[in-house]
Image (cartoon, rainbow, N blue to C red; front, side, top):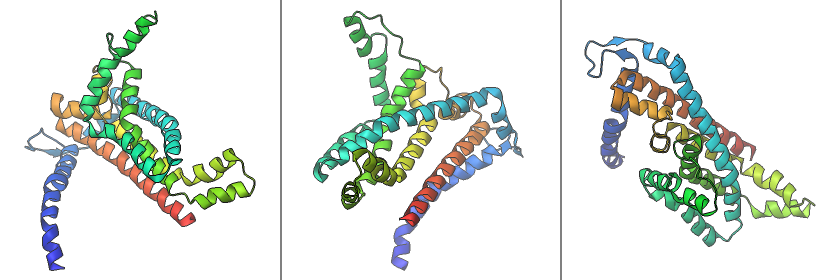
Length: 275
């Protein structure tokens, strides 16, 4: 036991230094005023009250709209893809999942710049439109561009949990469904989809939480015209220098993420009890 404690001690020290202390500072900044150096600080709730201003409520609304939109598109694309992958043999499934995860190995900034070159006025899409005799379309700095960036970035987080749930389904249950007279659609809806719901919930929550908290994609593909929660936090800390208000927004985002994680765990627990 003592040997185990010695092994974990560096990890605990490192965790306290890079996780616990920054969180304590964020909480302290969120509930105080007096600047970024914690000099002559005063405890207050004004930082949280500011979020109720119309301009910041619009940021929250925009974040949730784009978040839900990206979740919907990722689900409509990701579930069929995950189901299609699950129909192959195990080795082929592993290879196809590898192809799904390969984009995650590339830095988000590089992937976003790639979309800029595709969607810009002189990009690949408009060149194809011109070749077909169609008038060029303005794609950059629109909801469409931001949504495309979010979906391409978040799609693996939808596919992988769903595929994992489908892969765990006992094949004998599907065979039993067919033996009892169910057609392919009934088997899919009553057996496969129902038993893959935990993966769907995990995928939805992960995609949504990551979508509303990102700041690189809206900033580059939106041309600075789109401010989501992540962009607002970045602006307050880096551009404006209001660490107190930025910390308050960070805490609200943290609470949203924690609620999402709690719902995921609760649903998984209830599902395991049913099984």
